[in-house]
Length: 511
Image (cartoon, rainbow, N blue to C red; front, side, top):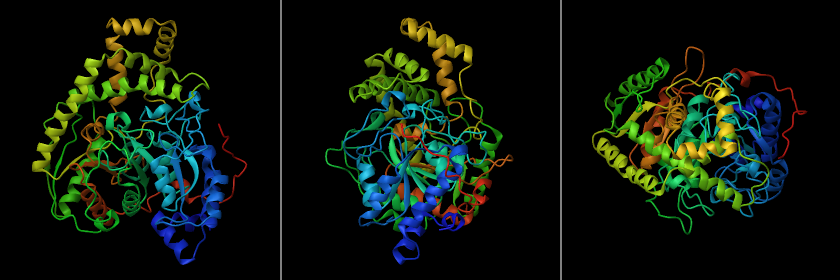
């Protein structure tokens, strides 16, 4: 199949071509592999090729709604039996799970042909994708910029045309942030909608959810139908949708009440392009008949950020300890991860428990907001996709912190409170570009990033919608309506208009 024929179909349409006999799964896989070879040296989205596994999958019967469609996993939490799950960390290169994660099994049961794994920051801890193990991933819209993170490899793979849809997960914005950076649709399901099992009950105390990044809303709806539902032993089971999401999506959303805000909840600057993105979305929504006004939940944004960062810092020591127990030993984690282990180890159990209890406060306040408004509209990002390295600590500060960490002085200084200003700076720098996404993670509510705005420099900048718990159907209905009003499927980076000359000499080296 010619690349430009492949590119004009979403995953749902490709599956229909296979079902009708107009295309074969082999042709689709060949097209995906050829495109991966063509862009790998510039984009670096795929860090492990699984062509042999994909060919074996094609040798058997393919069933399910996505039968024959090429697909990529994210190299964390999505264990594929017999292959390493590295978490983009040198320390995890030797970790080979013995069984599939539940989400991987469901993807395979849906007929998706898994041929690789995508890049992410080490342990999915950042909103950019720049691991030392695999190297940074670039944004297909402008290679000097980040595709976001932590599902940055997935987003870059979709935006560059390797696949129409790829797997991600979202513990602080990790589906929505890269979707916003790369002009894609990304939905974070409600807590418990998709199982994290069997080896994990709840990731990040339930803040993280599994989902996909896609070019069409219907692909996301159908993928959610594939993924949703509990596994035996899950912590809790939430009510299933009234009908398949692929069907619910096509229903009119009715007249929605939508409150919007462009103010950063932590008081940091919001770029004029992000403000413009929300105001344009508000006008578009009004034109579609929705009731839109400026309003925000009565939530202390600084307190929410503090709570999130306690969880963010606090779970890293446990995560690294668990990885060591699983056999990690290929090398030390990156400096920032080691710093987070030290910072997180200084958080005492009462403080962590107090911050976890705060989640209920935020959820109740958001619930009161949803008593007046069906949706909350915000920027997804407070700034257009940044250039590579824009959020890095200065080299001198990295060197000092590295010395303190190696000598054991860092832990002592943190415990004595002598580095509070440095910790606050790291925390503030970590959230200044992405202060809007954590609300959904801590409250467990579903949210989505919708690609409605491009900057004057031609970079995508999505907007975020947050819905009440369990109302993924409302999000999908609204997204489908917006997609019809302002289609984005064919709005693609210039690199997708290239010729199709193969660059198959570029290979992904297994780790």
